[in-house]
Image 1 (cartoon, rainbow, N blue to C red):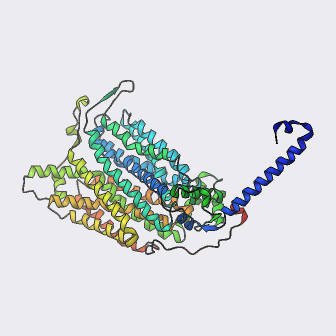
Image 2: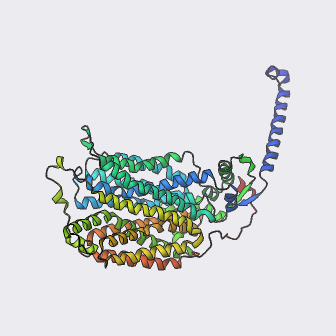
Image 3: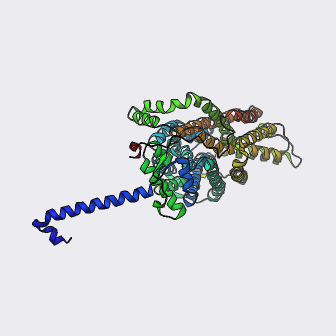
Length: 559
């Protein structure tokens, strides 16, 4: 009807009546279309199967793999920086030990909090801001003028990067069904392995240069080691930006009782993967399989209490009932795996350089164990730091880059092989094989007098870290949605305690009882291989489904 007619006072009532009739007809048409689209209720696992596996999944796997690599670059990148920063920051051996562990300390102290927030506020809601904060903290640390400022900023980096370090596993896993969950985590681990290969390459390309930039206003000279820190933090920024285009975990949204939002996310993924219209996926409601509505309501009620009380309520279920055994086993595995994979890794370049030094002194017919080489060579930082710090220029030997690159290449290949084989041989076989193989090599190092063979055994010992993502996949499978992020956070927190414990123990006893260092690593890994047998449901097939729940949904749950 024309505007001139509607403006007429005489015909205003008629216009309003016609408008109401038009709105009613449009609403009726909308409801009829909605009923045609939403013609079935479906379990969450089946809904994920219906969206197929496509472009969205590949992009998600890549982003999560970069996220995993971002954490590792922040933790291990400092091992290349410490020898070069000791002149500018006047670092002692104790200072370098602190810097090696300070990021891990920040991760450990905050893992519990981030796990709680991820299980109550959302995975994406925690990961995006913490990644932004981690990058800016790393950027600021590259401008540090003394040890204490540098240490505090590195601690803050660990504090913030912890928000995504464990949450990413729950986030990635909840976009995939049980059959594909472990495989996609291993696929992301392959991306993680590729970035780890790039770390020593980038370190060589950046740290072998000698350029400088003077910032007289803040009293520092910007050198390659400072720029390398920023490069190690760039994956943080990339992942944070990518979350502007990625949705929240649909499993988390469903656990909060938001059926409509969950269906919308599922349809969005379906449209991206298939190129079809969102409306062609006829799903009306999704049944939550892992937990009851009452447990969800409990979480919502607890969220209004004090923070410490909420964290306590979120944490205690992991250490009670059937969950206690699972938690203790998984935390033990993470502890001793990280003890070797990170604790022993921090001294990997230094130990091999000392072996090379002892080899050059002994001539061509050189036979000695690694520990004999360590005992007979002593490196005192005070001997190489000159009194005039302005002329103190330290360079890393090329062997440090080469050996690190070899380890990372083997990690990359290992992640690919595990991703291919895990659905065929199972998680238990992978865990036993890697733990036992690495442990045997750790013990053999003590008795091997061939330096080349000792180096290979050392490399294989460090490959125990291949089990980390398998253990995280097992954790995600064993715990319900509302406890997944917390359970992964706690197990990784215990694992990182193992890293701190391992690096400090190695630093303490390496010079005095080198053999004990390798024996502790080897024996503990072999015991971990035996312990994996006792993981609940570890023998279950990847495509085994849980019994179906009642598919009836009340109208209130569809709100």
